[in-house]
Image (cartoon, rainbow over all chains, first blue to last red; front, side):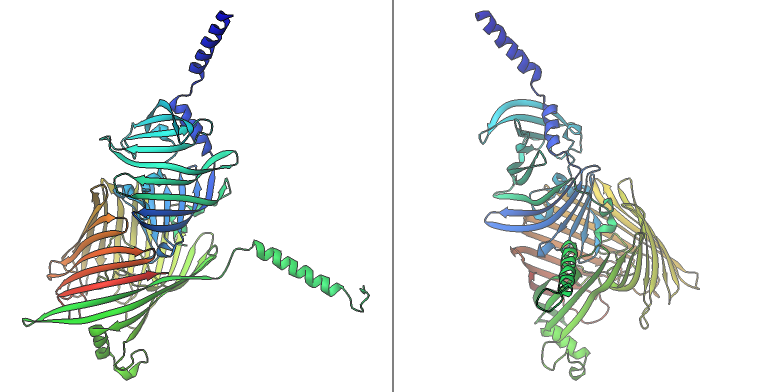
Length: 245
Length: 368
């Protein structure tokens, strides 16, 4: 009997070792949550600077294949301003001057419309495994949710952050918290998911916050609504032509 | 069929059916109508004059209502307009009264603030499968330069405006898309009075991460032909440039203009610097506010997401003329901005009207 219990315990340990997820596998499961062809949504960005709050509203259309996105701002101060994101390139349309400007690479680290979400953050492709070496660091709870903690270190020069650490919930594979570090080890930003919604069997973050650790009391809360996944989108919209419309 | 009340029920059923059909169709139809947006801003200024070693200060200012309108459903076409209604105060009002007799225009009431209208845009567009057509007053951006643009024959930059706004041009424009990032634009300016008008063709594409364009332009009255090219991309810093070779009619003269610009950021993108240089080999017969060598430089430092300070300088080395601006910007409330700025003037960059040497101004703007 004791031998059987001992054997069972050994088998369970072995099974755990054999079936434990690697960092890459965790990332793959996270990507399955984002396995949609298209996204159309309304979004609100609240930029908190100390006690001040500035709100931007926008309409987002996105095609996953080819990393194509169009964002059109609808709040009065930015009415008609549009962003066209194609892979790693960004063009902005300024309606007042009817001008389409290609944004220089060094400006991509700047906050979008004054927010803590940089253009680079918004442009980032889902394929983190292409730019980072991933290791499973530990298991740790985040706000009561059991999580895998994975650590990512940049393997390419164009990776937006040198190091990242993510708390990925077991089961849902939602990255509830992420820390972004510079090469010096300095914590640059923290991203936390505040609310998720199950859409079509996938867990979709609908409210998240980006906290700028280099500025005092500075964070941006990003919230999506009227989310439609996998709707048919005209690819012609993701072009310089459509920006002027 | 009678319904027992002595009246046929069929007309009522038919009417109800029609109403139901129209309602069903309308419910699925995209929303139509117009949307309005814009801003109102007031500039209050003190101008310093130094004439024959006599210092003086004068008050001036303006209130500007910018009213923009476009149609909501722009799937097949667009109507867009932009109108500025401007009220002048102080020495700016005095200057306008001197230019135009009071009694001549109802917009210039005697001893009252003159009111000006500036129609920046009024055009419509039609989106056909292979071409977008636009007719009317619109802003045509042909070049890549922020201040200097040798290839831009249409909507020039107003260097006296602190936001460097462009003026609208009365044109017919056809844009032929050739893919996502490429196409051919054909623009023809309408002849108005004695003003020279231009036509142009531009072909553009994105190659190796750079936006490229080649252009051909023709000024009808002066019969000047211009061939040009422009580019914008990244080489660590952002770089951009334009080149234009002009061929003057009859005389066989030709002259070259070239612009090179760059932008870069420091201090984790909180400090953005930009510079442009323009070389113009134009002969004296070709009027321009730019000399042989000209430069623009600017620096903007973001204090935080709602405040920044900036400084810029536009300088014409040949004629020793310049405009320097230093400003502090604060996004006071959600749609309210305040700008405090100081401008220094050297020479006369608009070719007429006397200029102060210093300007101290406050702008408050409300957007809607």
